[in-house]
Image (cartoon, rainbow, N blue to C red):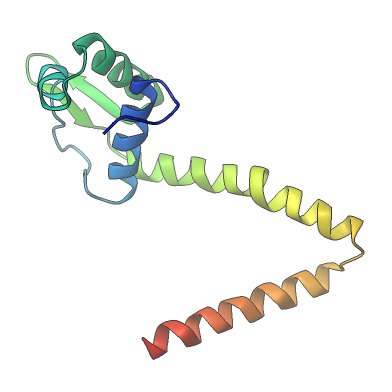
Length: 127
């Protein structure tokens, strides 16, 4: 399961973030305990704890004393905002810089994007 190049605690955090983003884990929903996580995925409980601690620090999860970990209110919205911001900074800004280098005007970029959106809608409607 956790066979990527990143440390396991990072992969766990990414998995939980993805579940929150996809709506699989909802606000105020309880998540598996670190012990359950460790047992289920056969990992060290300290590894699961490190992932959960990072998610608490990010505001994705919070702890209810004696009850366990829960998805924080507005966690999905915060994650979406973060992903949108990263998209603009890491994907769109470099693409626009490249377009500028290539002499592609803002109008051409906008026309292309609007055309691509139209093509995507048309393809989706046919399905």
